[in-house]
Image 1 (cartoon, rainbow, N blue to C red):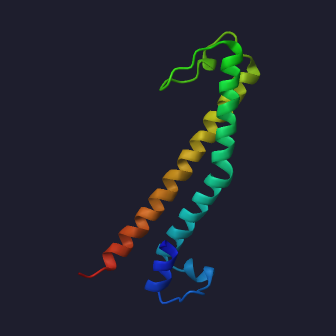
Image 2: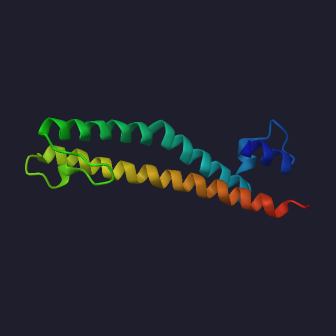
Image 3: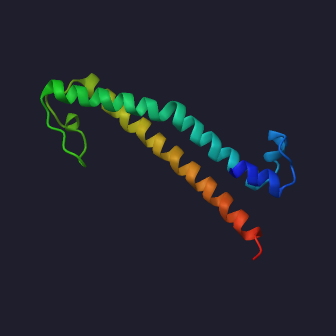
Length: 122
């Protein structure tokens, strides 16, 4: 929808070149938002989910109680191996990147909507 409004507002037509989209700031915001969404949806979210299941499986195997809203008990457990802590660290890193990708996507789309709203006349 956003690309459709962009093409319409900039008179690019339905077959406007993707490279023409990147010629101004609004188009770049849309492209960054799209890339952040695609990378998050196709890579970061599935990897984060897989790592979450690995962490929870290790917690169950070690008999650790995981409470909602708290950090993983693997962090401070004496039962956790270095491999367990490495998986947990990787989860924290990938999850942080995933959240950053979501923030970038929302921010760029919000900035695009703001710039479009300035051009509207009532």
